Length: 111
Image (cartoon, rainbow, N blue to C red; front, side, top):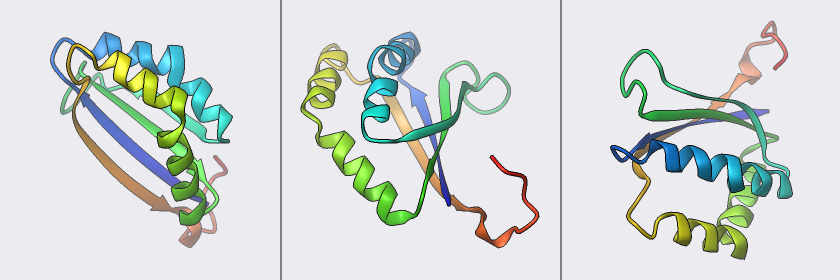
């Protein structure tokens, strides 16, 4: 099992539009491809407080992750949503991504 952590720093003033894109479109499209969001939230303490979305997704392995992201990013509905929501400029200033493998920790709690 792998976990992917993504941190999206919004363009100043564009966080509400980014949150709306997740709520109105992204979650539904993730579900279409079996992409499981384990956790999501806004950073309230730390770097980028009140201007960052951080979320974690669970995948079976790297191949599963790559296949699902490829399907999602090429979905015609997602391509249209992305273009529409970024018509007035980008929503994301920067993105950081990490992939975590919990396999080495046999005593780790179930997620």
